Image (cartoon, rainbow, N blue to C red; front, side, top):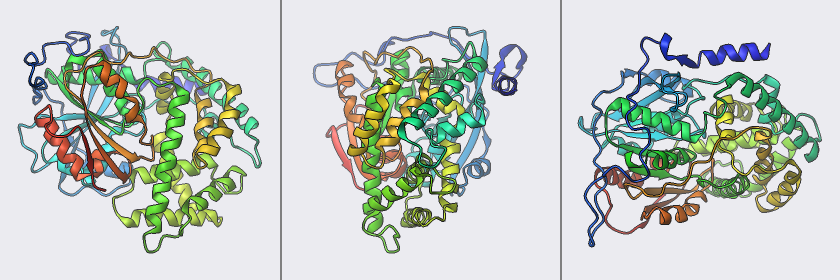
Length: 522
């Protein structure tokens, strides 16, 4: 019964072009432009690098409609004052190698202000499978980063397979809950029992999703999300895209730069993930970085009047997760409790009250009153744990870790990162038994030197990914400008007016003058 239900759901996701009279048939144009090719500006002189390709307004735009109320309601946040939020959809081939085949309906959300110049070209934002890109755009629209919107409209493209871009439904409730809890279902579950239970659920989910999605079960990774951006470029009729990749969205942008490199007119990587790194390294870097973010939260909260965590917030959170791991917190596992905390920190409004509210939810749960933290956990799961998000992440896995290695990683990483190590190691099992797609090679050249905005206290991916990209840029002959920010939250661009100003300058005129290593105040 599950498979029939799932197939029905996915048939609503993947729409055949022949029966969609309103489908946007993409101009298929040149399929691939080798990295950096395509005549992007004058030849470099010995004294200065060439300017980046010019960005342009769309020749044929999408059909935008106001959706501020609906978007705010969907995410349970206040409607951003002074910002126009509009939505549209476009159809993209499920497989660009089969352009006359089936398509997936992709959701786009545009934000602009009254100050945004009418002739300003849009930049395209993706946060990959970390969070819906439309939700990340709302961080920018409601925070200091809205200063960027005064210079350029931003169009967020939700990753295929997750709401609102063709939401997948290919797992059972038991599979979802087991994966969401990383195998913790009973009191006192041993690490080995968790691993076995999680591996079984992951393998079963893989079988179900493969059966449901065949022959497209490998068409939801970063390179296919990049292909959706190329479809948008063709639909717009522009030569180049200005791209913003937040978190795992940086994988999408760098995949685009590799596959369609001559079309990437601007590349802004906001607290990027480690492109091309194997699963073990990515998970370990994330554990370390998120541990740092949680320590930063505890430190910042302790300086606020009314912080219920006191002066030992890390200790309180460590105790809370230990109780959840022992099955002593109603409705919460250690994994869902951690997801609730990190997601709330990632998206919290830039004000002390938001941190104080989270501290109260944590300490209440530690006393046994879990209602507030359970609500945050449910919200986090909706944003980050959909079937499509898991399929996308598993499609991108390289160098999967053997199940027999996980206990050792749990022990070692927990010593190194007490709050996050166990969760990161166990999460490696979520893609057990899943097939993964062919890895995209790093771009060999780039038409524009990238702008890197790196948040050192990112609660989703940590802030360690940017440093891993140095060899990639060296091999591509690129000289990025890097802006560091020590604030707390997901997306430097969304939370720093200083970073927004640098990004606006970069979008207008590249290369940037001045130092290549910069910092923005928190």
